[in-house]
Amino acid sequence: MISDQINAHIARDLGAVDREHRTHVKKLSTGKRILAPGDDAGGYSLAVKHGSAARRTQAMLTNLQNVFSYAQTQDGVLANVGKVYKRMDELTAMAMDPTKTDSDRALYNKEFQELRDMAVRANGEEFNGLRLFRGKLYELVDKGMKINWTDSKAEVDALDAADADSAYYLATITSETEQAEVGLQIGDVGINAWLGGNDTAVEGEWGWTEGPEGLEDGGQGRQFWQGKSNGSAVNGSYENWGGGEPNDSGGEDYLQISQASNPIASWNDLPDTNTAGSTYQPEGYVLEVDQGDLKVGKDRNGDTFGLKNVDFQKYLSETVLSIETMAKAQAATVTMKGVIENIADARAIVGANLSRVSGEIDNLRRIGNAYESALSRVEDLDMALESGRMSKKAVKLQSSSAYLAQANEIMNPNLIQVLLE
Image 1 (cartoon, rainbow, N blue to C red):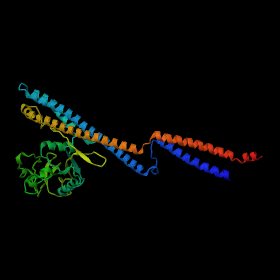
Image 2 (cartoon, rainbow, N blue to C red):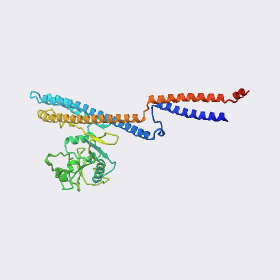
Image 3 (cartoon, rainbow, N blue to C red):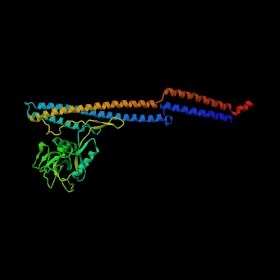
Image 4 (tube, helix red, strand yellow):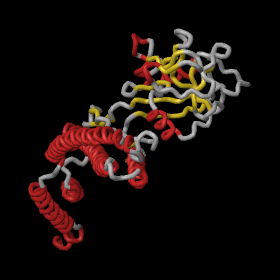
């Protein structure tokens, strides 16, 4: 009976020492001071918070590095476009040589137009599906069914209300360049589509009533046409009426870009209806978006800053920019001076963006390092101290095992019987 009690006591001590020894082994194998909440409840909670903050900070840092690459790509494309425009400027000067003939200028113009087209294509470059040059965006919204002007405007206004960073409105086309830009971005219109103009205020006074132009003249909009088809543009404004338009046939007060007019994609006036049988009745609208600055997260709390939008002047049509005659070359000289300055301004904006992103990256790195250090202080194990503790437990474990073996031997009933005999 006494032997059983002694054995049980030594066994309990041995089990406790073994458990402590195993704990030290686990800590040394993981390098962590806290293996479970029970080890240090407060420390465990702090380690979880610091670890989460460190991981989120690292994720934001990766995002910023991607944004930095985006801006670097912008600058690379702009540098190339700058070289293209400088060559075009050089060709313009060569075309102004009075000893050259128009045949010579036609040869210069071929290279000039190839370079112009290269700049146009560069403006559409993307970075992982995101446009590098975020100027105006046009989209053809095809509803697949007849829709009136009022309902189209209501849809666009809802989009505008839902996005505080960008402005959405029915498209306003105020220049030949913009008309070409619309064609470039949405391709062949394919359907009759509403635009952001009408003459509802005063019959015959056609104006742009949507977007920035719609805010002009005290909110009345910018007038671009006076009268019917025999009328005239106001102050040299751009217009693209189809043949015999506008004609106000049956009270037509709203503007559309039409596939049924002549020429195709010219403008036509229509009433604000969605009559199913009408040849001209639009089945959608052209949406114009003034894109806001690209929002970039700068910390793990969701704070952001705006990466300034960058764009550059481009000329989509040979009819707008050419050097095939002396007069056109002289006009191109003035234009090229402006576009080269525009490229310089765009690169300056990109440089400012790169500087801002670089600063945010450095700041996040410092914050991330601070969180990692804080996490290390809470969670990491003092290897030397823990090794000493484990060695101490190992010695005690070995000693306890030896005691138990000796106790079992001493208390062996056979051994006692031999001694008594």
